[in-house]
Picture (cartoon, rainbow, N blue to C red):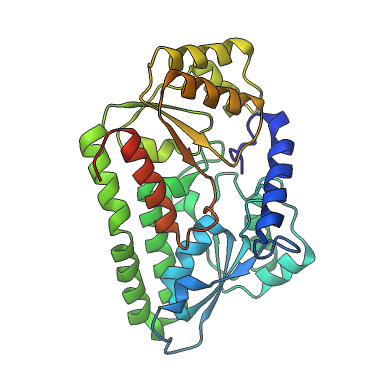
Length: 319
């Protein structure tokens, strides 16, 4: 999926077509009809619930996976968009989605303009259900970079907020939710340890990116963003970079002014592919990332660790 601001506008349609085709080929759950799913493997190893589970609706899988882990068997979590074939910005809810929200006891959204439709559905069809918004708990305004799941502090803040709401909704399962929160922290240890290691050994090194997906994580790692300003502004303003912007990017790569290129594989199109080719020609390491939980990764933690491990290797950090 492309940058949530729908950057490189004319590439969005191409990306969607390619991703949908891949989704069909891989027979991803829900892609053939409605791209939603209930909580799955993340609850399979959780202890049994001492009471009735809380009905939770999450807008996107980046947060849905985390909520499923936090709720365990004491939460029945349904994620509306659990497929990379749909851009949350463009999603138009179906009547079935309204029905889904109407039964929710808790709603979890990203916010920051990423999934406005979900916040609207929560307000109109589930007015009594508390809403945990990643943007709200991190005080991120609309118009800012919405890829909050790449911000380690946001992951922690959302986890705490979700656990607090689940406990409020089902006080008899308070100890259960506390245990799940502790288990989540333990599961995150490889993720947090790798972040700390990269920051300690590679802070100050530079990167450039075809999109802003990874920027929060890069900042947490102490990396310096050397993406050419004109290119960045074009992406932020949802326009195509000018030839001069692209040439500036190519020059920065050719002169090895950046240590690594961050490339979102879920965006297809001539411009990012040209940048990638330029990095390869210049010998600049390329680290592939995705906006949504990558197919094959069983958890948010596993997905993030896989990407961080590749980044560490690209930056020469032993793991």
